[in-house]
Length: 497
Image 1 (tube, one colour):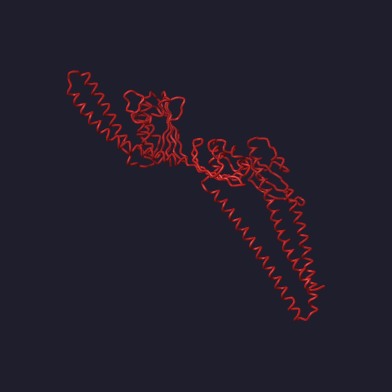
Image 2 (tube, rainbow, N blue to C red):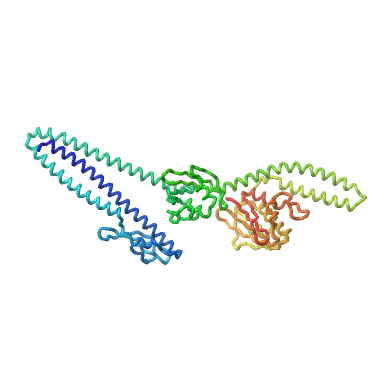
């Protein structure tokens, strides 16, 4: 047999060995990926069983999926493996509550896993056989070469060694490139996951069937569902409490962006269809921003109104002064002159009140202020009893402006016939204060008008009390609303942080 033929066979065998080694590595990676997927699926199903157990719901296919579900000693969640023949058994311990835990047993086996293992076994045998055959051919080639002189042997072997070395170097270079690409892919995947999980925008991704695959922490906070509860469910189920937002998302057939008001909140929503993959939905809650913009617009309108009112009030006061002077000169009919005088004094008082309202709030002091004493003082000034929470609340605000706000609300309640105030307050992200009275309440037809200057439900009322309250609350970066109430008037004040 010629040496060139042996060399050719060696080259073919080495190439085949390289191919089979790479196939062996590929199926090994597929086996590990399949095992990881089974473990992740088992963990998710175990979480679903725990959730249903907590809610006393019937267990369906999640219970059938596991080999066994057993009670376990209370303790933290854990994951272990134990051998079982040629397979492994996954042991998942999940805590239901402080006194109960469950142990889930699942044999790590699947049809794909069995196929991968069979192929790995075959490839391993083929690789060993090729290695033995290459070794035998190498020995035979060495035997043939030893028949020549040492010089001829050196000259004959040198090209083969160079060729084999070049093949080996190419194999190592290819393996390094594959490893670098895998590492780069893992880094990109980890970076993308980190960005999605840390940004303050809600990120949702649905597959072509409309089922949720990505539901980041911001989305969980916005819509009150955990990732486990949202995973593999449809948007119609997860966003059931947001009908307007859901309608916009479902209607978007191409890339769309819009500000949607839904269930009392405002969302800026981007919907990006991804062909053949699904849809990416990015949502930002802009409710606070819009409320602050509304307050800023209100303050700007009040400043403009103040400038106009100051000029108008000046002219009216001048005319009233002239009218008062002429009325005093009329002595023939004292009853009529008294009525004229009362009307002029009423208009002067109203103009003075409106001028006070129209002046901008220039200096605001923010100091630590207790709400309870201010509300109590405002109620006492108008002969009203008041119920307060047991624990007082300290906020950073202007005590003088707060005193005017609470005093005007108490005055409004007293003039309506109320005898008692009920106040509550809380502070989480923003400060929320509610003040209600036991009066007759405010008629529905008047609800939208009570904040307007000069509007009053009483005869000879100036109509400036609630308008002043609205102005001062806005100046303190807040908002006040009249809430629905079964009895009396109920106001809600929110001071934004």
